[in-house]
Image 1: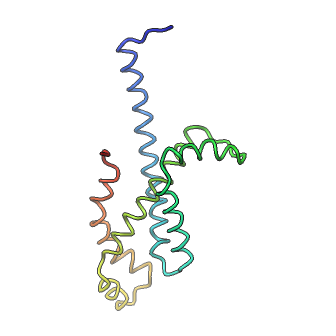
Image 2: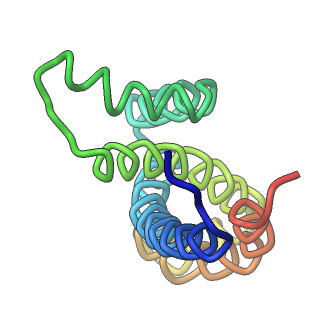
Image 3: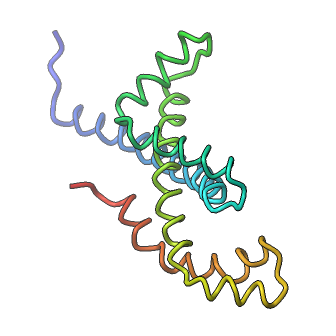
Length: 155
């Protein structure tokens, strides 16, 4: 049996921290893109898109993250989709992050007063111009604190 010195343990922790930070960065970027897409679906005027994105978000948010890791690695392999541990962890963290960010950002968009939407509509902006030029800039400012809180240290 091998004895580990404190140096061995510290070096192993530093090596592991490197991968943890990289996986966190990948989850933040991919989860942000996924969350933005889900948020756009949640505020869409099309009812099927709203219901589909709400269902996806509720299922992911209602499932513990550990179960999502297990489903991404073992569940997909049962279906014949073999993923590396890195890819399955990325998939699970992206889904988890995207589901929560979509709700955070949807709440920020919905907190913008209706008069802002009406003003943009009065200026003959189409739906995407309303979002991009009037609503999202205001929503970004409101969503900074909860987004940072989501990525910050847990309790």
